[in-house]
Image 1 (spheres, rainbow, N blue to C red):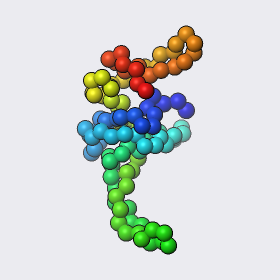
Image 2: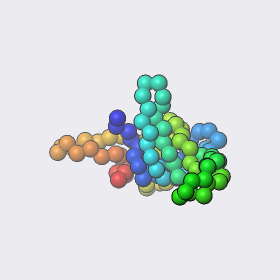
Image 3: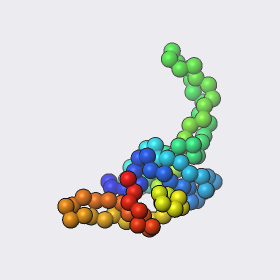
Length: 107
């Protein structure tokens, strides 16, 4: 699947309990016909996880990021640092690039 959001992009949460928080995309979790595509954003949607101790890990209670639905995040415009919609532009040589509303190319 092709997505307009990729790893290491800066995104902002636009709905839900984490609304307004920004972070970097750590992972994309592709869905299917019945489950939505989800994203893992750094320092956003932190949940408490209880881990059993193992020989290598002492275990205990830790905080980790939980995935958000992709519809709840929006890409940040690198020029204005505000949420923006993205379009795909195809060059003459067939190379595709993502363009923000401000006209700035997103890496």
